[in-house]
Length: 162
Length: 153
Image 1 (cartoon, chains in turn purple, blue):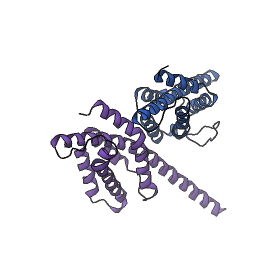
Image 2 (cartoon, one colour):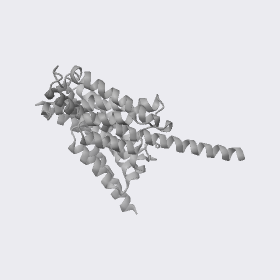
Image 3 (cartoon, helix red, strand yellow):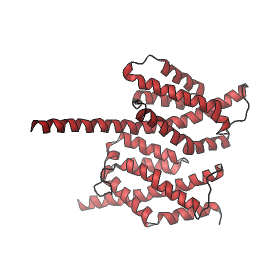
Image 4 (cartoon, rainbow over the protein chains, first blue to last red):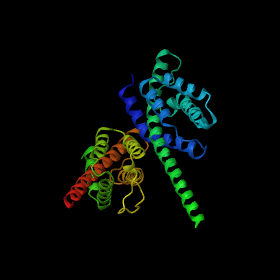
């Protein structure tokens, strides 16, 4: 159970740190690593796990997703889950204590692990909410780009006939 | 005057400026043009804005609506950029202009820093109040524009 102070801190981190990072994370994958935005089915699965389960369950889901044998046409889904796993691992092992100051130095005990899990679940939920919202815009941009290209092709064909 | 009261007073003063009010009017007319009878779409935005403590909940909501509904993607012939969709325009205004307004207020008369968590929470409060005020004014203009359009039919 998170304290009021921890919840307030996470809410502030969500606005000041996680939002810009989630936007940059998904934009970088799409713009620089040629990934496609995450398809709706994946978005729904990830969101529902993030909202209803503990962090270790979410982590298991993410690992399961990137270990699957995705066909080449869906390799960007695998890439996204690999990168998401990296990001959450760094957050859990380092940033939770060193940067976010949400926990003391205690590690290993059952209480510390439970607290770590609860904090990470809350942080991951926020991050995924922001990532999914930006992902929707990226999907829309891609749809609009395809429609524009289609229109241009049609216009060029019309021009060539004249 | 305590800081909470000072923030409310400064936000009210900012909301009365031509730049702020004019922009809210413009987005209200844009909303009336693209959403027309879909009042519930703005009710959802109002509800989020009035109930959340996180400014990013409002931004995420705008993004989701923009991705989901074509009406939120439509431009407005009378806007500075007629091709800019309603949702994208509103998101950009909040993320750039209103954030800059917040910074100017905090760095100026409110004298709120940006280093400690206490300062960051206050800055967020100012930003949230500006967003709420903007949405309220935008919705009023939307209602007015829709009623004018009905009357002229």
